[in-house]
Length: 131
Length: 328
Image (cartoon, rainbow over all chains, first blue to last red; front, side, top):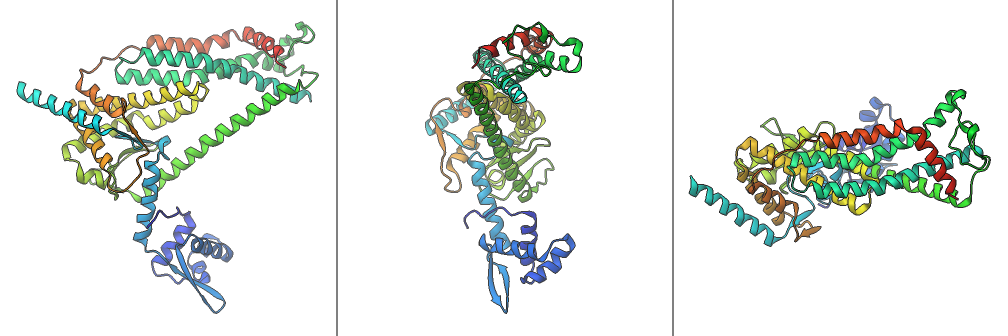
């Protein structure tokens, strides 16, 4: 799966609710999630619509209402999130807050790497020879 | 218009001092880069941090010093010195504001500088927000490792990272844990713990933020050398922990080889065929460790550069007014 968009707190809660088998009609989601958070039905409807536009949900029209269901599984979604995040990390997007053991965005040339490996191996042999 | 005219003078004062700080700071930073090449990593790191933050700090202190008499006159009418000015002298003063708002050129320069500064600040904050979001998501996706010191991320890319600013945490990916021998993993953990202890991410962010006054090529070189010094200091710490400098060199080469192979078709953004950090780190580990040096003289110079403008604030104030009088 290609990288997926990162979700806000309410979007994540709605997705978790649907992944856990919750009913996908807006009123049902509002009863379970919205009322406790003091969120209106309109907000829940907007969130479901946003998730549908992000291609994380599918929907069917039942009577006058849309019923939503997840388009991707939780595992697929998390793999997609991780893939996107790691790609951004390797692209240097988090440089301001990350120190890496070896540079994420720049590689030593193959000749240099081979030269370094040979240097280190020679030094190791020399040390073993002494001892 | 008088208040706006005063704002224009204040902005042009800040710009003039920033320009001087940029010139002098860049020369000093370049000299420091040359002077510290053969220094030990830990000391070199500290001096480079000073060279990175000092120009902006000194510029800010000098700016405050230039405005100090104006604040004094505002708070104590007895300290008002403007009555001694000749007519036409630029007044950096909050009691006797300029009669006019100044020429169009001066206004364009002042507004342009404000717009440029705002754009740079917005760009920096946006980059910080993006990085913060990524780090937050990584923390949500990672799980604590059994060793109690690191976190694990279920991805194949061989990642060994220290993340975060205030409470840094260490992340090793599945790809790193499964493909690097335990002895080399211990080196990587010790290395990252050194980064966390030294708050390297926070320090480098601070220097990145303060060094924007420097000439771009000097700034780029300073940030690059600072990053290298931080890596080498962490390498030296890891060598002390595991008791074997060669093992640290082997860990660097092994990790670099894994990254070069990669486990997924990520595009290589840059390949260095010059003295890349990896090369310099390994060569430093194969050589004898360099001894540390005292930073007393550098710190004395820094303190003097901060104190002298405040002590000589009258002279700074009059000099600034004279320079402003030359501007359109």
